[in-house]
Length: 259
Image (cartoon, rainbow, N blue to C red; front, side, top):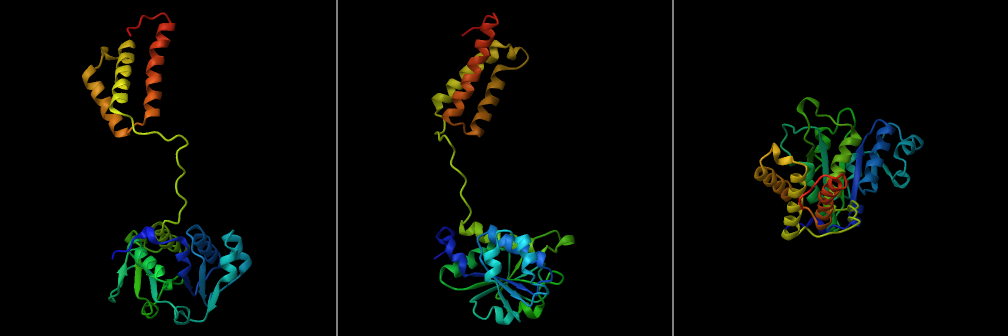
């Protein structure tokens, strides 16, 4: 049975662990934490970081204090991923060694499918200056490669985390939905549209617009524009009111207008 993204509730993201392998800079760790908060991830493992200055990390992470406070420290990647049923490594490029390479969007579906069945998934990111070694990638079941310009393939650590986490968040549908329009309205009926075109034509005649333009061609273009716009009833009423007002203004100015 194919996996349905909509079946993954946000709490399933709690089975996804983000693993930073020997990170160098606490500023980058803070930026990673911030990206995790943005995308609904909460579990962070750190393997032998050069500097785990929580004060500096918190200054970058802002609201990520809970992630920092619950982060776990390990001495090796093997130890950090020992309890994971799926380990997904990351690389700036595909390598000559044959591996299960995936794009972030493709891999997000499997990550969520495993998490939804109660399995723990580890997302592993390498050191800023050299990524993951081949030996470290040997511990990964999949390898995600983010498509970039080949001449500038390397991403900042937090950027790479954000791209992968974003694809997972989108697939899990954890983002806040767009707000509904303040005034909902159905698509305009054919009759409403024809009334609009009639009023627009009258107003264009009133300002002598067609003196230099072919009436049929102009109106056909306006119909095409309106069709692409999928106008709703409120929008049609507004445009009709504008057309009316053009003629009423001319009448107030003493200019004879044919109704």
